Each structure stands twice: as structure tokens, then as C-alpha cells.
Image (tube, rainbow, N blue to C red):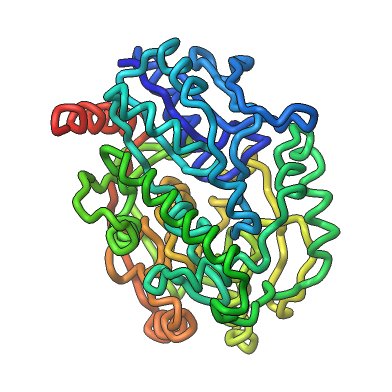
Length: 439
């Protein structure tokens, strides 16, 4: 099968679960004998603003790379300041020539960031099936997480939300800087200076529609319709969890669409049966891994630690190379390298994943389970589908949940079958074939 993927690019220029999944899946598809190409938003040319597609150097053996020069802007930090720039038109021939050159049987889209509507229109004209995997909510929302001012807005998604969530968005010039190739080399330095002390994310005053100009409101109305128009051209939705399915069902204008729910995997996950055991009477340390951010539930975790300050249980956080204000019984272990991940997981007694945003999946859960580490996860995490109910808590009740488990000396045992990337790749190929037959 000839497969064209669209994603955000490669590590280290782009990071996160989406990038890891897309690149691992492509590598495995090549191993399984498929012809694979990757289209991604690349460099910004400050001297020539015209959009073109250029074949770039091969980063994964056997995967042909196509880079979009001057793609649409990437709202990777959430919110959109210049809505008109996110729906710029390009000539259909830019994408038509690419598809005529590679001739894919199927197209697998991992994000709407950076890609023009014309790409989807050309695919539809050529009757090439488009599979979309729900890694985030960009397009349904200008913020990929749907999280703003302390809550998820997926049930209150109107023009007012789009206007308000974009108050703190980066301007176009700053977004373009993030697409400069060497930005990844200085990203950590910038973040270190930016977050030298512990500060909660800024909450913005909720403004009324009339507080924004009529032209600005109209630009956002057009942008909402622009993305809904793209979603209408998707021929098959691959939801990686029931949470992502429900959010999309609630927010897609077109309610009649084809889909399947299928959990995902990546190359760090060892497949097979895993046996998880938790004995709270033996837990003397509880761990958090993730961004030092509200939407990831860090503040809830620190509140949990504070409530145990008189106990003999200690807490630790991993995630970012920044100094933050923490309770005395919490150690900030900062970032760790992938080379050290086995050692990290070997020493974790209980991992708490307290995410507040409606996380479409959550690879951290699978990575922990792959190492047979006991985990307790927020009900907002998509990968909870794979866990027994006793391992899932409502994010509002993290402290009471853990205190109750400690007081009862809770014991949990369960077995879980995890899919390797090899197994998952075969599932995805079968999904492509079912989608093609069904449509």
C-alpha cells in the first residue's frame, strides 16, 4: 500500500506524542513492506512568501519526506491572534502535483495545523481516502487542548470561546520564529528564562463578543467554518479513545461520519501481557511526570503532596528543567533523557497522572504500564479506556482518592495486554482497508 502521512515534522524540531506516534508508525509501515511518504510544515522563507512543496532529506529510512515551505501558521501554543492568516488560500496545483507524483492509496492526517484546505479538496477530487487520527482538538478549537481559564470548553464551544481563548495567542512574527530550523536548539534556554519561578498560567478576563471589533468577529466566524469545512472532507475518523470520540461528536457540525475507536502505541511500548500490582502499605513515594502546567494537573499534584506533609510519604516531579516553588516534601527531578527512562520507571512506586484537559490518549500511561508500574489516572485521560475503574479518579477528588487508598492500605492487581507498534501498525493497515471498502 502507498501511504502519505501528514504530521508536524520530526524530532527534535517538533516534540510530543503526535510526532512520536507518526514517525514510529511510518518506520514500522516501511518495515512491513509499504511505500510511505511524509508531508509536514517546514521552513518559513522570509524573502519569498509563496507556498511550495519541496522534497527534503530522508530522516527515516525508506520514508520520502515532503516539506511545505511557507505553510499555514502553527498554533502550537494555543490560540490564534490573526485568524485571516490561518485560512490563506493557495493554488490547488501545489498539492495536486504532489499527489500525482507520489500517487498514494490512502492519506493519514495527524493534525490540521499548517495544512491548507486545498490539500483536502484536491484529495477529494482525486477520490483518495483521508484517515484522520484525533491527537488533539485543533480545528474544533483554536487551542489544541480545549483548555482555558482552568477548564475544558468542549461543551461550551462558541464564537465567544474562540475570541477569548485567543487573547494570549502569539502574533504571527513570533509563530514564524518557532518554525526557524535552529529554534529547537534554543527552545530550552528560552523556557528556562521564561519560567524561572513558579507561576500559575495567566487567567484572562472573559470578554463579551462586543468587546472585539466586528471585523475580528467575522474573521473568527470564517475560521470556524473553514475548519468545519475541512473536517467534512475527512472520509474516516480514527479516534484513539472514547474521550476524543465524544469531544469530536459534540463539536463537529457534520454529525454523519464514519469512525472507529482504536487505542494507539509507539516504539517505546513493549507488547504482551503486563502484570500490575499496587500495595499502598508499601508506597513511600508518589511520582508525577509531565509538563509543569495547570492543564496537566501539576498544581493538583502539589496540593496532594501538601496534604501529606505530616506523613512519611514523599513526592517527586519530573518534566522540565526549571526551578519552581514546591512543598518541602516534593523533589524536583526535572527532565530526564530517554536513555534513562528504564531506571526512572524502575524506581517509581506509584505514578499519578492528574491531567485536567480531556487528553485524547496519553502515552505516559502506556509507557508506565509497559514497565509494569502502578498508575492512578484522571478520568480526563483517554487511555483510561484500558484501565480498571479502581485506577481512575475524578480530577476534583485526587486528594480524597489517594488519602482513602492510603487509609485502606488498598491492594490492586490486574493484568493488561499492550499492543506493540508492530501489532498496532497491522491494525492501522487493516483500518485503512476497512475504510476504503466501507467508503
